[in-house]
Length: 494
Ligand code: GLU
Image 1: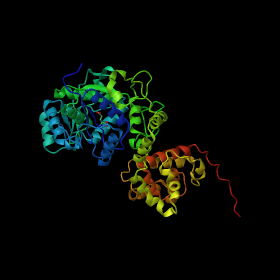
Image 2: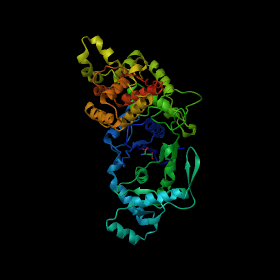
Image 3: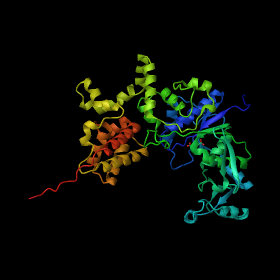
Image 4: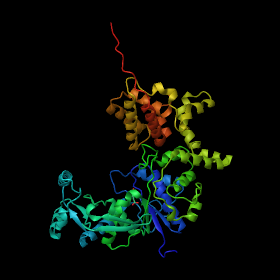
């Protein structure tokens, strides 16, 4: 049963942080579905959030999708018939489209100030009402709206959502899904700066790019009724909807970096094989047959249907993934393992980057590995350095909190070179009330389980952002479990 329209699917990441394992998971199911149906898999960069989007993040997303082996057929770097594929380059398209909606009355200009909206929310909360825009500007006449806009008054454009009834759509995995219109706010489609919001840009692009199936994570399910209203307002045929179950931590909460490494960079730096990671992601909510867990991408493509997706909330378990990775490693011959080691950290480039860190401290070549061993190992054992993990006068909680807050600051640190890290770490220590010496020593022990290492920031750069953050988090976990030190005894002075 093949439809006449060729399958076109997309992955639409926002470049606002590190490439996420959830992006690879959703990309995998899009890719497999496209290949199964001889269709196209498109990469679209949704960078409408101008304050949070960065080119570094976009590059990292593309590199990591390539690393796992999910190559797109159209995208910002390779072009294609429906470009540009970066939303920041499509501003004019959104402006034209939203103008049509204002013209038809499906959307309207809203001149309400931030203060009015805040007061409104406050009042709605106080009265226990539905918190949302009250539609004040929806009632304005076209003439008033145009006059005020013409006079330069700032406005946003909102979607006039139906106020009663339900939006019903079919999700391939869930069947009919219903949302009560009274519970959905008039969404902002275009901000005061003329940039579109996710809803507008996403729908316009999915339509113009000929997307036939939107395969995305469950967390977007509540956006779909708004998207349905937009499709109706434009008079367009909506795509098929497939909302994949979210990856979960072991406690069933949504996967988060506090409980699991979520950056694809971590999996790469830790020596996971991309095909093992893909295989494992393929078992998240989907099964190939019976209890078989190992399969290749081609095998998955050959038999793929959405019928075998289960909505149970797949648990992303690092231990299981490691076990699967071990199976893949053992299946390689010796030369194959060597080849993988070489593309991992035993590459000429990586070794060369470590030489300046070890050279001064080496008299013989046989000292290189002992000096740099912690660059090549995963999680460290802090037990031998336990007495260095708790700076004098600090409690385990204070120390663990300091480490975790530092990781969070590193999450948004764009420049991970020594020159970028040093001022950032100094400023952090000062702000947190730690002496730099004390703080730097803590970080050093956390990332290396040693008191003496090559210069701290060079070491962090050498480890890379993902490994450095993982170690700091692991160190925080270790410190948290240390017993509180006994209260200081009264020392009599003479
Ligand atoms: N930009 C959204 C994201 O970051 C896209 C969601 C969708 O696929 O519609 O995942």
